[in-house]
Image 1 (tube, one colour):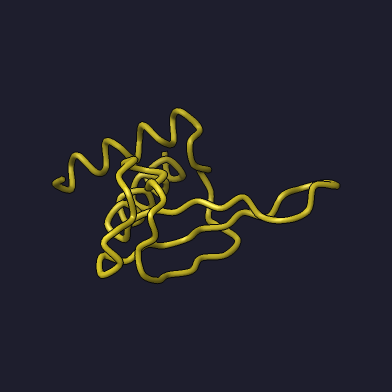
Image 2: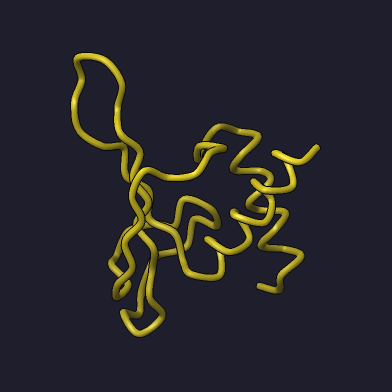
Length: 88
């Protein structure tokens, strides 16, 4: 997928509420896992491709984190689109 397609997928995920439109509370990186990317929907493997795990603390009595797995390139597209939305 080229950058324009990834950015379109990121905008779509943001608009649909599939992924938050704010900076994550925690960000981890590591090898791919067999979990669909929250941006493009493709699996996060092979492990050599790497993924980011972004986490958001839950508010109120439901402690813990909401976790999203995204490919490195999808994460970059999401950050770009999220930043564009913040400056608009």
